[in-house]
Length: 144
Image 1 (tube, rainbow, N blue to C red):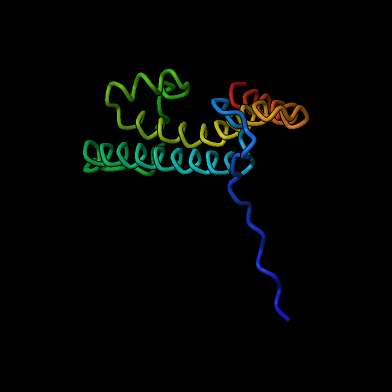
Image 2 (cartoon, helix red, strand yellow):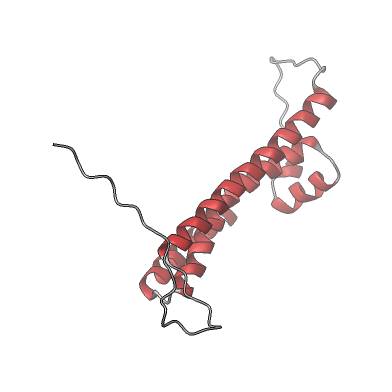
């Protein structure tokens, strides 16, 4: 006896009685698709930025000898997002790598913000409240 195939959500089709000219509400399938694309784009963009920064870092500092017996802490110039952006705009390879990591961290936060907007568009108050709480906790954790 075999198990039935898993159920898949299918795209919703507008009903024939839908008002013409009025935008249709986001279905769960639409939200899943947009969130999936957002996550893919965020990870790909972050990867490209990190590889670019790493390549520049190796090109500029790859031939320098490393003294493993001495620890030299980096300066505090890359400890804020604004400093990272400034450094990346000036072509600092370390700041570019840091920017890629910031983008990677921002991707799931953007996902939560997007789902909050989707739930608000669907007028689902309970999920708006829960997602808003999750987003607030994420932002408090990131900026405190």
